[in-house]
Image 1 (cartoon, rainbow over the protein chains, first blue to last red):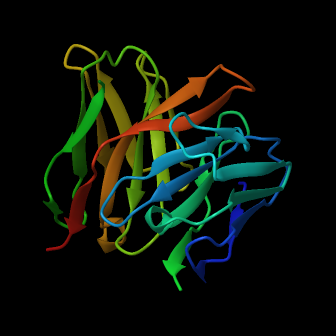
Image 2 (cartoon, one colour; image 1 turned 90 degrees about the vertical axis):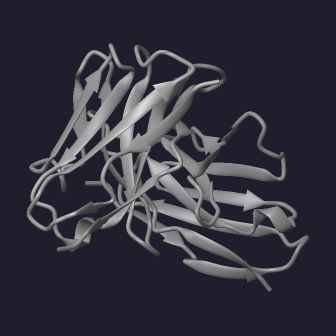
Image 3 (cartoon, chains in turn brown, green; image 1 turned 120 degrees about the horizontal axis):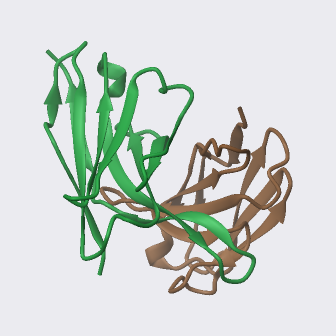
Length: 109
Length: 123
């Protein structure tokens, strides 16, 4: 099975900071990866699919990159509403075995 | 606007079977794939499995021996059964649609989510 290692598990940042979160896959997954944002008590919300495609309605300060085994989610200028937990999700292989990363909690510095 | 809503008992006894239903409103279940995801309190997300409206399924190998997902197109619902539960199965259970977007590069993602329902396993 493909394992997803997400780092860091938490970070503290200030409004306006540039934030980068990384997910590494235990084997190549092409670009079969998405990113989700979850706020306390809420369901996750889709941000990025196919590693770098921004979901409709998601602010352009969010971006995704990577292919193969290493992927990043970047928030170019952190806003107050971005404090949340972020998860990557891979869906490579056939039939797909969906695996989430462990999550990154972004907290206010 | 399509919405998903989970329903079912909030408390299940150890060794019994957890049963949840997700009702799809505002649209037809006869498209997309439909999935269950869970999240233990204070922990991360775990994919349980998904079903196509035709009935074909795909389960997380770690749960496959205990999981059954079924669909009832006449009621616009799909359901989860998880047998032989233990305290480790205590979690918020979400239903979600697994969607393929053919625009641009194309790709799959969880599109719509229910609000989630907490199921506690305890005697």
